[in-house]
Length: 108
Image (tube, rainbow, N blue to C red; front, top):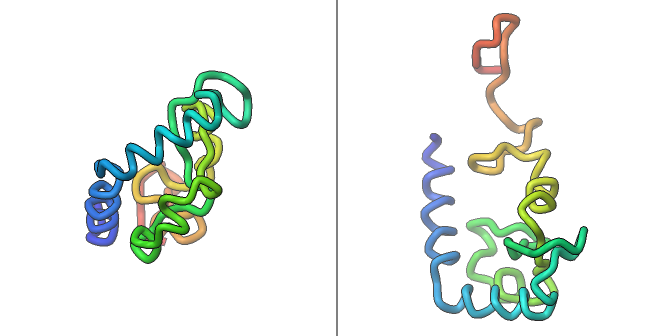
């Protein structure tokens, strides 16, 4: 894990554990009738349309704004992030590693 990933995980983790986030999350779920906005199945995740980052986690217009939140099921949430690396949200294009012809992880 990179130092940037650890810092991001820790800082955003504090936000996602806050009472304020849990209240806003519940409001979003209630607004969406606890259903996924994409497919209509039961929602499990409240997704930030404009993704959270260290630069905007303190901006209530992004992190707590109901207009920036959508209730999603786990499958639809996965699809929203499909193009991103699962750990650290590193876009494939910006990932400093690739696989060689033997399937070994190597720097680009």
